[in-house]
Length: 109
Image (cartoon, rainbow, N blue to C red; front, side, top):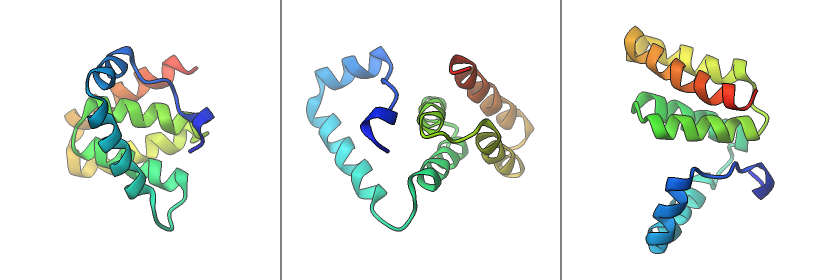
């Protein structure tokens, strides 16, 4: 993902990394190491979204949706990841995830 495609993080994130710059640096190193390999940026982002969905991490789901949208990943592709998770998560959790995603997508409409 190029720097231009990265959405601006929420203000609370910016405050956190100002307070803990070493954690930000460590986080960036982890992220960088995970991106090494044969997968393209789109596939990596959709996998990361799927992991966030499976872990029911609302903040990570929202962040991955923002980043996916910035990469040009379509709403249909994002929603397919949600649909794939439904059999594992169950309906209640899937509807919760769907609401988080719809909220983020509506901000970019």
